[in-house]
Image (tube, rainbow, N blue to C red; front, side):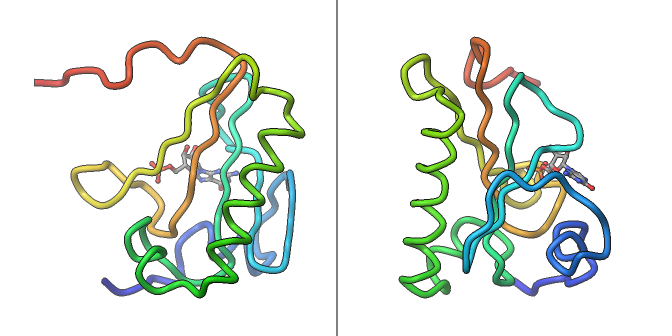
Length: 121
Ligand code: 5GP
């Protein structure tokens, strides 16, 4: 699986297009989704060039993986949504309908998220 460094999140990481930063660490960037699906909709991405969750799991360093998940936990704490709950989603590839081919976690919170999936066939 090859990484396309023209994808929109690569451009955000390079500062070529703006984003609203929520948190930045050595290996991780979190920013607001441009089209929020919930009162809180944050995207968490590694700074490294990984396409999907499985690519990240297989190829990222332990430091990157720990940094990513600690950052995720810190954001949940800072949003103050742990008590009421939230949903995390990571779309991958064709069947996952991944739009941007740079690994990212959606954090959605602030309302009931409804059923886990809508049946489309
Ligand atoms: P995916 O379908 O790949 O899981 O989700 C990609 C997400 O990226 C979508 O929720 C979409 O709204 C968001 N997105 C696409 N382009 C931009 C952008 O330029 N800036 C930000 N902040 N979010 C974007």
